[in-house]
Image 1 (cartoon, rainbow, N blue to C red):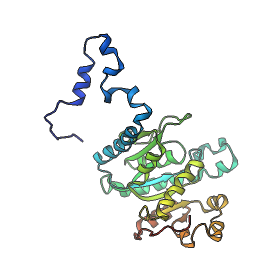
Image 2: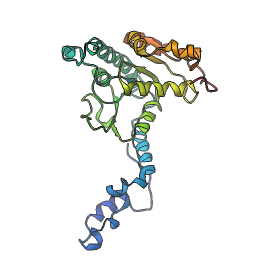
Image 3: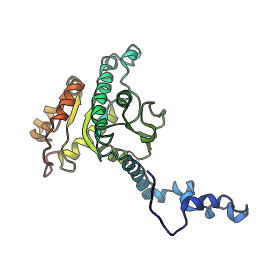
Image 4: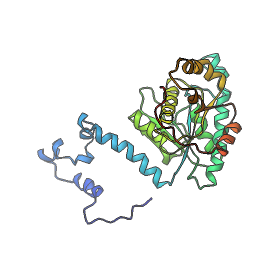
Length: 280
């Protein structure tokens, strides 16, 4: 979106271009002479971390605003969940059995994207972590329907390119996990958790904690695959120990299929935020 604001001051981009054409002298070669906002070494200094945090918050925020995206459907899930066609090459037998969740995530993204297209891609826009596995399935389902989807990647030592189904102009890359997680939730209309590992668990529990403590409005919070989640988390043990309240188990629902999840979202009646801080 073009910025139509006018200013009497000289344009920063023009100055950056002009600064490249100055005579080559000992003074102009000095790092001190570089424009601060065009100096990568300066911007990466330890002292500039607050500035980098702000930039990482602002860049996706401004671009999503320019695309008029008002609400999102968040898909969290494992990068290692294989496509069903590739399940015979999965690392473990369990991963092979979980491969059907790739298709469920893809089907669910299709259903949500149909709703999104009714709003000109402003509401119900699918957002994933932009990687393989469940994330790829989510972005792929949106592309199947001809809609937009968002990918929030992060730089990791073993990171590959974003999956090919993310809408290119809505594909972001992050340095800070905390800012990335903020962007996942800032526009969330629903949070959908598919089987995954440490990253998925981190995203799930942070989101649940925000809702549990009243720091975030309640939204449909859907866990795909009850058998998987019950096998790795003893929810009743947390309740029986008193480390969470019995009503905390009502903050989420288990679902098995894309259609079941879509129906819950379609018929969702917003509940008030939680007040107080229940057992954590």
